[in-house]
Image (tube, rainbow, N blue to C red):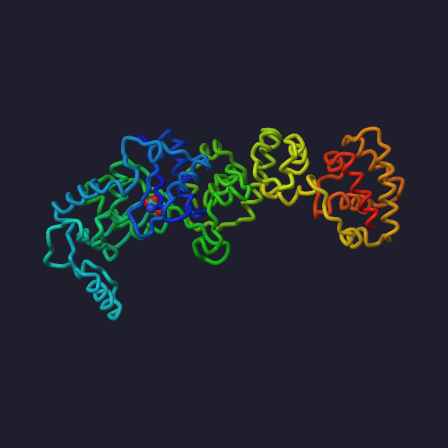
Length: 479
Ligand code: GLU
């Protein structure tokens, strides 16, 4: 039987790390099995609907390379894929339940329901609406909420991640199927849609686990085959025991993109948040993830979100792309991440800069701070030289002399390539008797006035003869 999975987000805001992982596993399972993944937009909660959120979801999935086989944009035989456009379908299924005596229109005003709840609170008994089920119910029509008529009993089921589950009759209740506004609840709509769309694996956050017995009751009443149920563990905030939320800095996925995280790294990181293949491997390409993914290695406990790990992985991916696909391939991804001063620099020059600095980047936006001195002269900060931990021991005149000597030697070089520069620096070191940390820090800082720069001979080579010598001279004068 073909495996059909779905990602069913609600367009209630931006899509953050905690949400998007629920798209990755259905995608991997569908691709691995040659089945299909459906994207369905669950937009029936009109109060929480956010304009533009659907586009953000599509954009995020597209960026991560998680294409869907049916859904918005691509269409498909089971549309519409927006729940708000499926009203007739839900109403038809609701009528089926009514005719079977398993659903009823509930005219009880909300204040009355609040009273029932209060009564139970006072009596310290669990509030179950079925104990207050109205005896006299009108014919259902939109405008009146429609409730399921629960038949309390035990349910056993298997969750692919959580294992064998059991729930007693006390959790079964008369849940609302269709709200007063005519829109279905999530509880009802997802069951109808999954059935209509032929979904075989329902993969979603573990927060739906406690409601599952009520869903099982509806499948049963409608005579539907249960899909396989897969509860994905929570993604936990960096500290404490709560779910990662917007308050914990759960940025939108596209914000990470704008900060220079690569889609490959994001996909890799999120896929491994709560899943592993049993090896120590940390870097996975999408084809590897598709090949290795398995439901039985999804962990059942929460997975902690660790942004530092994401950035580390991103750094690994930057190196991987550079070494496996080439400097140009990485360069093609850097547009928009260079410092403003690089605007007029040539592609060739930026490519050279990238080639000597890529292995220090965690995100592409690091380029902005880490490469500024390649494009404009840095502000001279003599303190940075004089108080440097290696240079402190040297007097100011010694520093000045060393710089002048370096300028003289470098000026005399017949060519300005990395190899020649490396040799020149080595002989300078031998002739002056200074430690590498002293001589090279002096030259490095004089060129960049930055906390970090790539290997000195490479920095000199890329900056070029004129710029390098001018900066060394300027630093000597400033001292
Ligand atoms: N619309 C639900 C959500 O955004 C989806 C749950 C499900 O996948 O069934 O959480």
